[in-house]
Image (tube, rainbow, N blue to C red; front, side):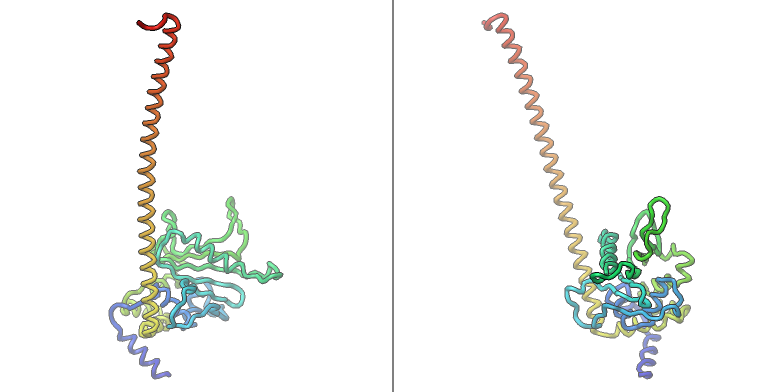
Amino acid sequence: MKNIHMHKNYAFMKAKGKIGYNMTNDYMFRTVLQNNKGTLRGLVASIMNFKTEDIKDVTIENPIVIGDAMSDKEYRLDILVTLNSSATLNIEMQINNYSDWTNRSLVYLCREFDSLSHGELYENLKPVYQVSFIDFRLFSDHPEFFGKYQMRNVLDGYLYNSNFNLYVIELNSTDIATDDDIRSEMVTWVKLFKATTWEEIRMITKDNPSFESTAESIFISNADKNVVKRCREREDFYLEQEAREKEMAKLKQTIAEKDSTIAKKNSTIAEKDETIAEKNNTIAEKDALLQKYIEQFGELK
């Protein structure tokens, strides 16, 4: 086993050019985190701003069989993690922007938060974190690399409950990362996720040796034909979903344009009806005047 590892490490060190699938592909993301517990531990430590030694255990509660075909029920490749038996993290990689992430992420968080069995005390609820890695700007008027959201008082920000947490990491916003984001190594994680060449990955791990194991896992996973096939399927899935979204948007636009045309026609008809009504009123007024004249002076000769 040692010789195999050394062979793979040597191959990784010699690898050149474009990476087949990096960790922005949610299947590759899932594969690396599920197969490499050290990577999972390191990422969770960075998310929570913990020291690695403070993490006694991280367990994936919804594992999949890596490389096997996925069912329709597994369209979401979220990673449900129990941290030190005391908190739950739902970690997700989301590249496509369907303009509904705030609602969707809240739904995902609520599903995990509502975890009590019948008759169990509410005080037994554990903290839950919906952790979203997204490749788009969540709020156009509020750019932020690592946003952390909780339930707080509107007036003074007083914390209502610390068990309900939404964390959002924007992959394209490392340029506005804070010093804390850099110290926690979250910026390094994101750079590793988004690296597109093996040379770029080696440059990252050269300055950050603790990420070498993750980099090698990415390399090994890209050499697994079954994993690559599933990554391609995920890519196709999102391309098809994006195409459907665009088609729906076009259809909505067409419907809106037709509605607008109908509304204009209705407006024109209403204007014509109003004109006709005004003419009818004018005729009626003339008839009334004529009748009055007849009553006073008799029929016209």
